[in-house]
Image (cartoon, rainbow, N blue to C red):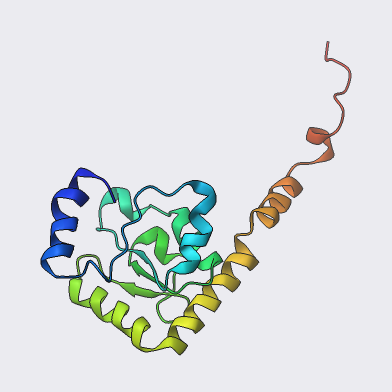
Length: 156
């Protein structure tokens, strides 16, 4: 939090609903502390509005949540929909469906087995498909010795 919208709309709403004891507002978190903060959370969320920009948006946040084994609730958007599968590794909700988001969060809070299963499936996906070391191995394999080897004599 800390954006003008968050300060003008979200903070007052949290107070008006009496949720101060249930919502942690840590402010800016140094990069090196992000994994510890994510591991302390119960659920990851990417609740985006369906827009032309967001439809193709895929944040590292999703991979970080999954890397920490967290279940996630995400908006059904094109890019996210390529990897987040409803009921398999995430709970996926239509953009703007406030009741759907509430039901998804409550399902994960109430059903710890579901939350653990989705978090584990997300972690397995990240380890198998999105580990940077593995991605770089695949990318490096694309290059041939011609590109990675020593330079030949100059062409005349």
